[in-house]
Every structure is written in C-alpha cells, then in structure tokens.
Length: 347
Image 1: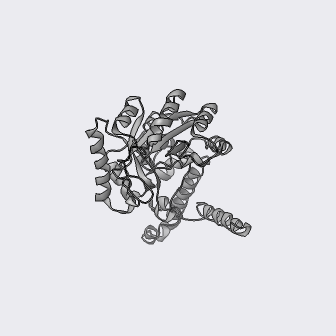
Image 2: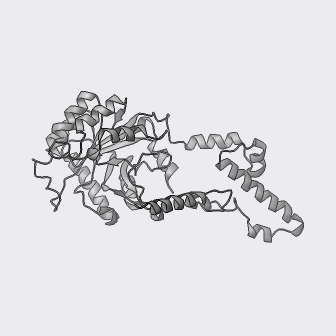
C-alpha cells in the first residue's frame, strides 16, 4: 500500500464512522432504523394532527429523539425525562438491559480459546503431550478430509489421526468439535440441505465411534454466512467458529471475539499462528481489548509442517509465561450464556 492509498483509506474509514454519529445523521445505522418514529419527524402523525396541536406533537417527538440520542452516547439522562418521553423509568430500562446481558461474569484479560483443525496426526503426537504438560485445554475439530490437490484423504494415517486416537483425546478431557463431514471448500455457498448433511454426517461418525455429541462447530475454511449459521443452530450447536459474512459489511476477518458484537455461532479468532514470531504472538496477546477474547487455531504442528520461527512448544510456553488461561470453546459457557449471546447479537 502506497502512502497516499493509506491516507485515503484512513480518511474514508473516519468518514464512515462519522456517518454513524446520530447527532449529525438521522437513521444511518441499519439496526436502529427499524425502530420508526424515534429520530426525525413522523410526518404521518404531524399531517393528521390539528394545527393547534402540531407544535406540541413536534416538540414531543424531538424530546424523544434527544433523550434517545443521549442514552445511546452515554450522556446523563434524568429519570423524569425518560418517563415523560417513553412511559417507563430508567430503573426499568436498566433491568431490561440486564436481562438481555449475555455475560455471566466479566471476561478476564488473559483468556485464550485454543483450537486445532482437521484431525491431523501431529496434533496427537506433538500438541497433546504439550497441552497435558502445561495444563491447557482446547477444542479439536474433526473432519474426514477428502483427497484434493492440496489435501491427502482422511484414510492416510501418516497424516491424520485414527478414531482411536481421537477417542483418546476426548477421554483425556479435551473437547471434540464438528468440522463437517468432508470439509468441502466453498460449502458456505452450497445451500441448507448440503450443509445439514455435512453437519449430521460428522455427528453420525461421532456416535459410531462412541464419542459425545459435539456442541461446537467450525465452518470449513473458517467462513460462515447467515444460512450456515442457521444450519448450525438448527442442529443444536451452542458455539460456532467462523468469520461471519454480513452482507454489505463484508467478511469480518481474523480478530478478537467480542461477545457483545459477534454471534456465538460465528466466533472469530486468529488462524495460522505457525507463521508468528514470538514478539508478534506476545503483542497480539497483550493487545487483546478489554472484554474481548483472544483465540488461536492451529493445523499441523510438527517440525515438518511448521513454517514460522517460533515453534509450537515455544508458543504454548509464551501463553503460560503471559499468565494466559487456555480453554476450549465449550468452556466459554463459564463466562457467556450462548443463547442470550445469540439473541443479543442477531440482526
């Protein structure tokens, strides 16, 4: 990126953020627009109001808009103002918002959700002993990979775990998650029936091998959209990992998980940390915003598969040195009510 391009990108970002300022723009936020007659003028009401009452109706509408804007921007609003404009008290409003709150308790600053994808053998050979040694938990997402130009088939046990090894991981106290039956690339665009088949197909494999029914789902290639999220929810999943596509907003991308913004069925995290240097990993952990959750997803972890300067073992040691509490996805339920979080974040 050239300097002029970066300057333009920053300028445009600042302008887009400014357009959500409700003191300057009316109904610019889609999720606020759906509540009519709060901002601006209700012309239908005004046109049907007798002339002698128009000023009173106009001022009442503007007072409601001002109270709402101040509430949205965290300014002080009197209880009498809220009651006069909307007919309920601040205390009642706060109680309603507490009932919506998805957090069971505050998110600690050192929380990390650790994931392993694709049932690769090196996860059993290399990662599992390190996790046991350090007292870390994790979720292992299982799929039966089909042969493609870039992947060996699941039947190749020089590359993938056996079902006996997968069962051993569960018996050791780690979570197993569903990563679809065959990890078909582009499956997010293949329709509801196909995705339900992929989810339920892997569930059948879990049952056939004596494993617990999974409660977490990882979308193939880490990409989700509203349709496949609906599939995961229809199948009873409480947690899902994938960078949620949101129409005109595009793909959110790899970042920290914010339980007040991100669906529990489309949790974001950071993939391919095998490229990280130790300095980069430390900075990424330290930069976790307050109230958000840092996540890492690994694939192959053997020396032969590793591409970066900081080994898997060393990265896990860094997590320990920085006082990080490393958990599985299902263990998020200690902090977050997934059903409330789903309702809180759904459009």
